Amino acid sequence: MVLLPLLLCSAWPAAGQLEQIQTCGSVPYYPSDYRCYDDHALCPNLDGHPTLPCGGACYSPDMYQCSEEGQLSLLPTANAGSTPFKLEVHSSNSALNSKPVKVCNLQFQTGADAHTCVYCYNAPPMYVCESYHNETVLLPSGYMSVDVPGGQAWFVEPDTGKLKTTAAGKAGGSGREHAGKNVTIYQEGYFSFSGSSHWLACKEPGLGQLFSIFAPIGNNTNRGECEKVKLVVVSTTDPKEGAYAYT
Image (cartoon, rainbow, N blue to C red):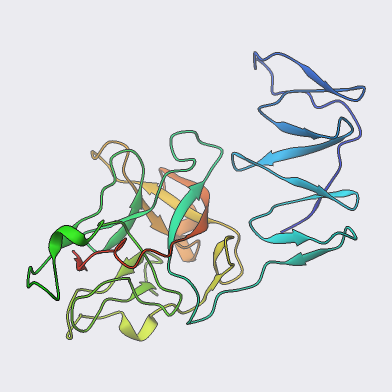
């Protein structure tokens, strides 16, 4: 990601945008586009979220951290033993921004019409269906937070770039060999495919506000009804926040 310089001139909006002008020191700006710090430092909003000042530049806290000396460094990356996590969308499109990413039909999706599809085998006391929160929870190891024997893996399908999970159980179908590959997980930061800072949220025709998640590979960048979005890691420590199995 390219670091952004602190704004030193007027921050005017796009033509036709109606919003009350504010000032940062002597510089006018629109709060939908910029954030003012200490009445002198202006940093732009990026994908619907503010960037922060550090040592004369602006940075995304989803990829960098700033030291007390004003030095930037990358966020630490997760390893197989790191905390389970959920995914959240960052986007300049308010219909997608801050929406959770969910699994249904073994595909990762987002939007107002996305929902999590699960299955549970009720076998107390080991498996109690009512105890699961049925959120979409991933493990940094490349697997999902499930209790079904054999587990489930998350992966990017090499041919299509679609972010998916394997089927439940020991057989699990194809995809396990790709579990977690080519994805860098920044702790409380970006979920990044092959160094790219963005994914594609592609609208499913006739299904309302439902978007499937694709990696930006091959012809995906030319797909219609797709928007560039960022996926951000949200850690969770509740072992029951996941599901028995995803379907």
